[in-house]
Image 1 (cartoon, rainbow, N blue to C red):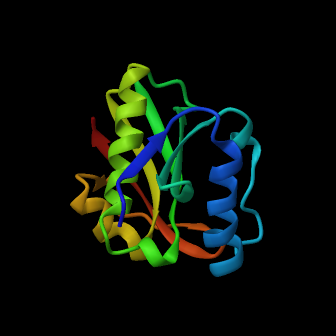
Image 2 (image 1 turned 90 degrees about the horizontal axis):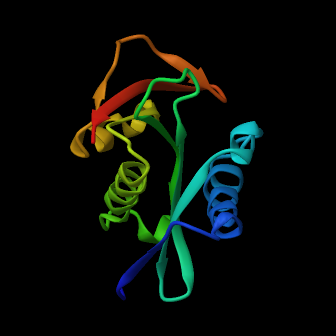
Length: 143
């Protein structure tokens, strides 16, 4: 793998392409895009010129100060299990901190809870919520 670069601006088109590949084509989600896409910002990771991963972040919609919500974290299949996902999380944390972030929240698919725990997140409660029929858990981390 070449050096990985990160963009935090002018990257919405690239973020969408990764989300389409992972969530729509691969996981068959129906409602990938939502109103949050109009207010969030993205981090995108590249190998050379190719966008290989993304995540979005936005201020907590409940107005909690210095809290950001992370989401739509996606890594193209050939790049999984190579720590790119951890690099996406680290990039989201850096971007949120630049805007005053002190805490991050995310809704993790049940199958990804272990990954997010390795990134320092913990479940906020034991209650399972469903997104597109997938069991998920809210998680948080001080950043």
